[in-house]
Amino acid sequence: MGNTKYTYAVARIRALEVSLFSDAVIGQLMASRTAEEALRLVREKGWGDPSGSGDMDSVLKREEEKTWEVIRDVAPDMGVFDVLSLPKLYHNLKAAVKEVCTEKRTPGIFYDDCEIPGEEMLRIIENREFSRLPGSMGRVAEEALETLLHTRDGQLCDVLIDRAALEAIFEAGKRSGEPVIEDYADTTVAIADIKIAVRSRKTGKSADFMRSAMAECGSINREQLIRAALAGEEEIARYLEGTSYAGGADALRESPSAFERWCDNRMTETMKAQKYETFSVGPLLAYLLARENEIKTVRIILTGKQNGFPEDALRERIREMYV
Amino acid sequence: MNILSDLGIVYALLGAAVAVLFAGCGSAIGVGIAGQAASGVVTEDPSKFAKVLIIQLLPGTQGLYGLLVGFITLSKIGILGGGVADVSVTTGLLILAACLPIGIVGLLSGISQGKTAAAAIGIVAKKPEQFGKAMLFPAMVETYAILALLVSFLAVNGIQV
View 1 (cartoon, each protein chain N blue to C red):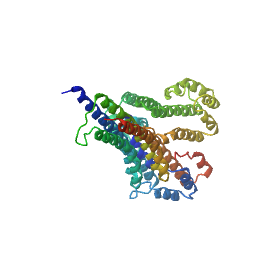
View 2: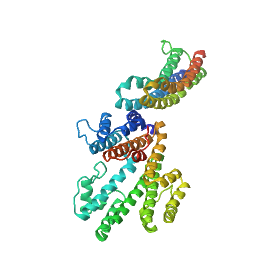
View 3: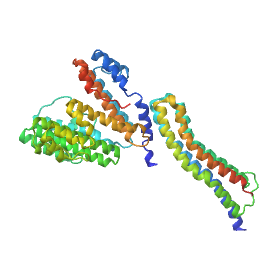
């Protein structure tokens, strides 16, 4: 009965999906006049801790934690979720390398809900115990630290670590043996590559820079993307039209934020098929992404309202909901 | 002592065992799968307990069908009545063959029904008002268990001991 190990988890996720925000709730949030009113509305929906602080950051942080608590509780094997926790792990590495090099301590820059929390990462980098890091991370950490110490070039260090993170995500996807996770990992890397191409084009970076920043993946040809980026932004859009990211071409022509929204919407769209799965890890991944998407959208609305953004600018950034 | 005539009752008893064992296993696995899903839903929403319990029990019927056929077989060969009948090898094998449909179909349909019930519990989790429709999908699988029960029942009844 190997294929029924997710039965309990999926049923529990189904029950939780009922409390995900629908497009109608997001509409209600958009209609609130002030950020305080919108925040009160999400608190009434059960967000944050009833006893905890009611400010935006702590409410949203608590929601992220709650999501992971549920997944940790129900998932028979957390290994398949590496693709989602790796970005946090590599963020911690990047932050620790910079803290060690600059010999400054900035509070609140680490994620603590991942395999190696901030303080431990900082100790590993300070004491140069690279072998304690998983997989090829040790080698990357050493290289990034040396690079930053010798060149003092923060961007070069970022590029090194970000690329290693993308490669690790792609590898973790393949290792999971679950098609839905593999697809997610591939799409994440491909979209990151496309964003690198667009930004490199805007800042006039060389082909070598792009090659060092982009990771290989299945659905995008790195060399062709680099050639397109060197030729111009329109060329990138044209190249995308020939790939499975064709819909992104129009969004890219519209604006960078429209493209970001398109990326998230595409992921939600792909995940919607998981609503009808009963015996695989898919619904768990879909729920995690749906929650991330929901929290991101609420954050956009709240900060937008706090800073008096016009409604059109907010609407351009609102993501599609999973339910 | 005639070994051949003794083998007849052994085959007949094996038939009763097949019906109860396989159909019972099918139900146990099926109710187990549906029970995992039911637990998942009740963890988050205990108010749905009654609804998911009914769906969880649907794959349990195969075990009862197996028990029924096993019971008829036992009374047919006199094990239940007190006086064990004199069953020839041919009759014993006929009884064994008659018990196979509910045994095998009970096993496979019980597992399939359990999986369908788990999926149907997902419907109740999200749309409790659709409970009636959710019940129908696993109930469809039941048809084939009933057909197998019918054949096993008629066949065991029709064999002259």
